[in-house]
Length: 221
Image 1 (tube, helix red, strand yellow):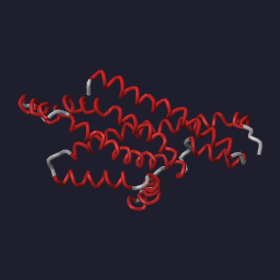
Image 2 (spheres, rainbow, N blue to C red):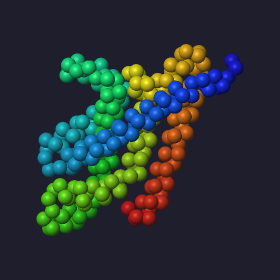
Image 3 (cartoon, helix red, strand yellow):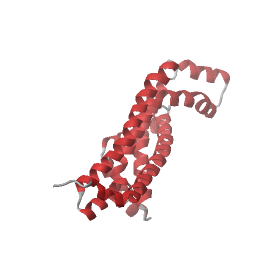
Image 4 (tube, one colour):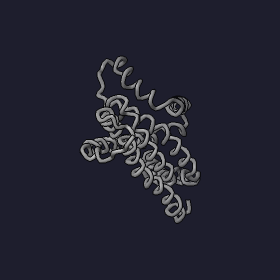
């Protein structure tokens, strides 16, 4: 079999569009997932047994089941329950956001525990409202401590986003599969698609190590 990568030149715009969809989806889910993860982390460290139980069940479920099954359930089953048809992009956002929220909640929970008890005692002594304690004292320190792991979670989410092609979202993987089927050139097409993911994910993974070694070391965290 002769390899012919030049055939992909005809589909570069389609691949670029698929990559843009992947990046958009990933960024949306990162923002929403991190916000959700922080709220879940607060629930898991709260004094309410109900909040701790519900949030723990949520985290264990979404961390303990395959992302593909979560995606299929939200795309195929959730509309039957709520009686509302969900667009495939919305289904992908919901599924990946819930997954991202679960994995980042553990990151935030660990970083919240690392915030010294004296910080909270000082907030109480100053009579700061709970909202101010969270937004002005706890949140900045927790995010700073969580940065390396959060970046790793973001890289993982970027790679996991390829699963949304299974529900028809025109991301990079979906476009690549279509081109592969139409040209009967799976080796060339899927190799290039894999290289695109690698070219983006590898520098991000290296950036995680750089942040962890240099920035956090300088801050002595």
